[in-house]
Every structure is written in C-alpha cells, then in structure tokens.
Length: 109
Image (cartoon, rainbow, N blue to C red):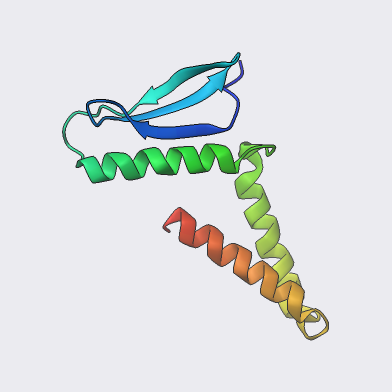
C-alpha cells in the first residue's frame, strides 16, 4: 500500500477545523481532518496539523523508517570524531552536532 504523494498542505475548513490535503490525480483530496474530541484547544489542533504536514513533506524522497538509524549513525560518527581526531575535522564535527541538535529541537525531546 502507498500513501498520498507529497506535497501535503494544511488549511482550515469553513468551520475552522484543521484539514490536511494534497493533490492526487490532478484533484485536491482530503488526507485527514483533525476534528478531535474537544480535548485539544484549536491552537493545539492547528499546531498538530502543521507538524504532520511538515513531517510528511520533510520526508519527501526519504525512507522514514530509516530516520532513527540515521540519527544513531550520526551520533556514532560524532563519537568517533571526538575520540579519534576531531581536531582534524572541526567543521564535520560542528555540522554533525548542529544536525543532531536541530533534530532533537524539532522532535521536542
């Protein structure tokens, strides 16, 4: 089974309910509507919709199942650099640290 291709977009419907949509076969189609059960504020529903769309579009061309393995590989590479010659590759070390920090910041953990 495949998913609806990217890019996905977000908008509120005429009732203010967050709606995620995409273009499939040349037509706009609803991918998801975040109606909720009333336990989330409208701001949180909107933030969730924005996050879902950003995650889906950010994975364009990637295997999302490999994300955590990639992060672990970056951590391993950073560790190896720190133990065996970071002084020779300071830009690589900085780039890896920044990528890991950004991934952690965006993940919220």
